[in-house]
Length: 98
Picture 1: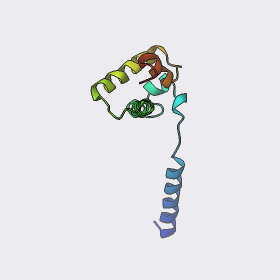
Picture 2: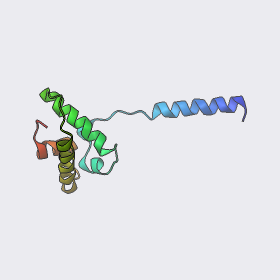
Picture 3: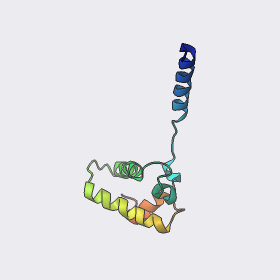
């Protein structure tokens, strides 16, 4: 491969990587998207949600066991409510303070 071809391929790779970045509005993620790994790994979304709700309360401590149990509760709720936004599912299952 010539140097020009390699340089062109490298530039295309960099451009596609830069275009791959995106932002998410967590409040718009539905239960279906959450459970189906359509946006991201549900655990990653759950970690963000946990940080969001704990941050609102000023809580800096996380109980790993209850975190896992809460994720499972939200996942179970989402089975029967696929169109519900996941943030509403969290509030329905765990209350607004979680």
